[in-house]
Image (cartoon, rainbow, N blue to C red; front, side, top):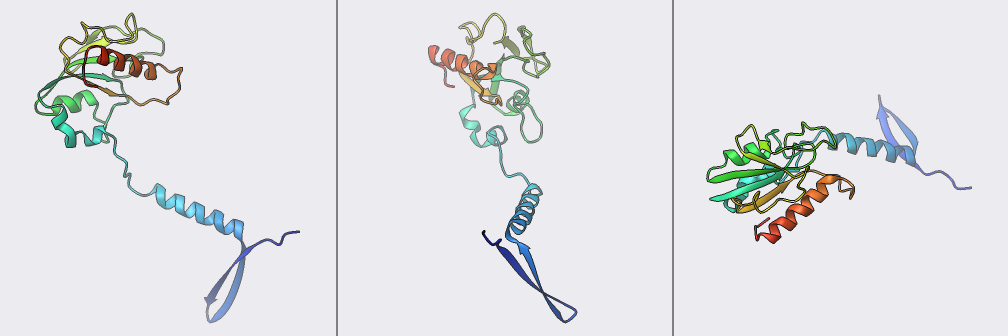
Length: 177
């Protein structure tokens, strides 16, 4: 049989020396919990693309932008991409393309999305109803398409197909994506 490995800690208390033997597996478990607890209390250091959009504002300046997006496209301050782009000088959001659940996430799963107007006053085109891919008419005033949605990456979810069809439409109409 194997002899368990131990970690020996030498401690002194009130002038007396103690040796404490702790099984190695318990010592490693304790260290793991310590590292995780320190990591969980550290400030977040990951920024999304939307959090860094102002560093790349020149890509969008003086262009008519179409946003393919939903309620997951928020920055670290909870500001939605439509509002972030609307606040950038020289950037014009001229169309929003809505996947399943709607741009602001207020539509139930499986419900068709209707065309409409976003609270920011921008036309919203449904990509979860009759059309799954942006049509030429929907893209007529768009000079660049921007896609921002979080997805789990499962092929049976609709967001990955929204991405696919939007990319196809952009390629067909020679629109940067």
